[in-house]
Length: 239
Image: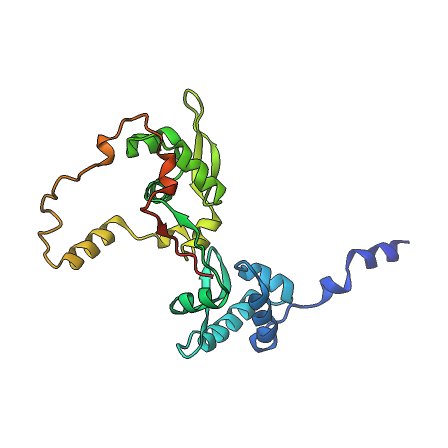
C-alpha cells in the first residue's frame, strides 16, 4: 500500500524534465501565439509547452527576428506583460476595408482626459478626479468601466470611503503598452511639444483665451453627454 501511494504522488508528468532547446518549441509557440486572442505570458507559454523560461525567451527572440522584418505584415509584440502576434499598424485601413469594419471604438475628449488622470495618478478617487477636472465625472467613469479600461482598487479610508480607481490590463492592450512605466513622462511630453513648435520659448508663451474652457463650466455639470460629441478620438485599437 505504501508503494502505491508513493507512485501516485510522483506522476510521469512531474518526472518529465522541461525542454531547454528553443528550436524544439519554436513552431508550437508560434502556433499558440497565432491562435491566441490575448497576449500570453512567458510563464504560461512555458507551462503549456513544458519548457524552461530560457527556452521560451530564446524561441520568442527567434520568432521576433523573423516576423519583425518590414517585409512581413505581422509582427511579434510584447504588451500587457505578455506576447502576441499582431498586424502592422500601417495595414489598418486595408484590413478594415477587407473585413468591412465600419465602426470604431471611440472615446470622447472628456473620457480621454479622465483616463489620463487615472493612468498617471492611480490609485485615485472620483472626488479627486473631479477636483482636477472641475466637472462632475461620474458618467465618464461609468463609460470607462463599461469599456473595461479601469477598475476599482479598494476604498480610501476617509469620510464616505470612496473607491480608488486604477487602469486595467485591457488599458495596456488597447494602448499598446507592456506596463505603466512605458507611459510618456510629463517632461518628455513638454520636450516633444517644444520640438514640434520649433521655438523653445514658444511653450512658455501665453496662449490666447479659449472660447470655452472647463473652468467656465459649472462645477456640478455632468459631462456624460460628451460621449456623443463631435470631438471623438480614435483609440489605438490595433489588433
